[in-house]
Length: 360
Image (cartoon, rainbow, N blue to C red; front, side, top):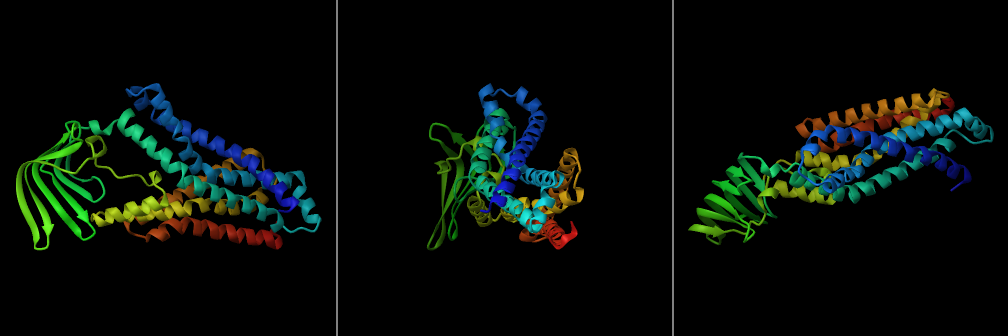
């Protein structure tokens, strides 16, 4: 790495880490205040609440990386311009691209770091945070009754029921399907099922069990049947896993499982592509930030902060609109995830080409 590139990298990463911490803390505090009523009314211990709040830090830091990248770019470039270093470097025989290419490379390193954190730290912390919220701080399983539900048990287990009462540990008119590579291999249809905490199993009452054999399904009636379903009521509530709880590999596997059970996977396909596309937002915003800073030239730091916040929110708004189009089926999953990067990246590339051509 050339001496000039190392110097520029040092100038970039100092405001980047400061901006990252600042934006993460601001958004984190907003989230805390938004949940303050529920947190104060919770029966969870102080330690559990503090753990829940701390586990939210990785999520907000990863989400604010693009905003911090843009602000660091604006401050770095404007700092070079205001100090006269930019003109001095150009006078020494360098070109504009020799100054902004190292900044773009730094944003690429940040994107790589964000992708690694998104695949390692975020799934663990987010999953633990969700469990604390659902099971301890704001236990959803204490809700009264869910009607006409379709639930996911263990691998290959699909449950449908007219009513699910998680607090009582009871399913009314449940149907349990065991799904293998060739489809449904076993089915249990009963009047009700009760959770047996001693056996850690669901016990079905007054029903029929159908097992698939060479000649088709063979039926056997029963009064009481201890099933292999071992998911307790608190974990059987009808919800889906959040994409942020999973790595790319886990998300792909989870989407395939839902598809095998006949559920729609459109939202998960969009989420999968979005998880790949989001880290590249750093590079795109950096490419936008360089020509913006050159045109602002001697604008104060407050102006750079305002532009970074405004541009980032516009970008995030476009991301959400594009994602909604993908979730609704109006756009393919890959296009919905990558369209904001394509639009803003094209604008950034055009502005950078003008900068390289001497527009500064």
